[in-house]
Length: 197
Image 1 (tube, rainbow, N blue to C red):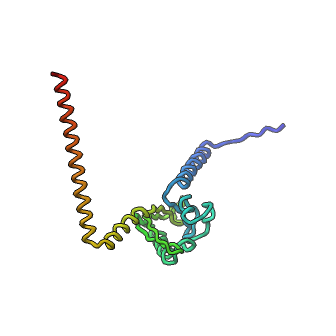
Image 2: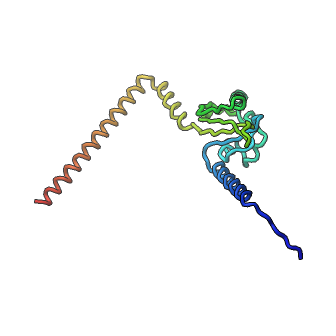
Image 3: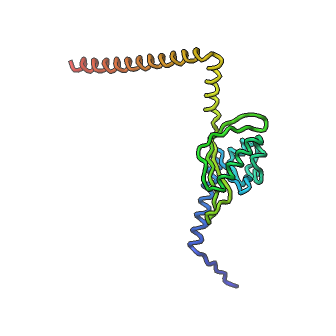
């Protein structure tokens, strides 16, 4: 019977182990983050996305995204703006931090996102694409839109009166709360004095 030996290089095994650990951590973030994460190649085609972005795009599986572009999911105007941003990032190597984007969907729906995009570099430092993360601003934008609509519908003066009323009510509530706390403290002190007598 022939003897089979398996030579292993501990440094290689450590490298493989570290790679697998990093891969597992990245996959965990892609699977569980509510933010929308994406990786694109030099032609701005999606290579990988987070589960939340796949859901936003109506995909059943994140792998369905491979090779598609923003033009497959957004209005032409929004997709063109995104493409121009990504070209600039790849040309300059400069990231874009905290850009508020008005995303127009093909059905005309408007969504807002807070987006950061970075150059994606290979192990040699060469730019091979872009990556980014977007946070949905729907709630914040809806609150602002509702306030703006209320201002318009009620008339500016009416909204200002309501705001003053609410501020006054808040001060009264705070004052009443302070007075209640002071009375409770005074009653506790009186009760302690009576116990000592």
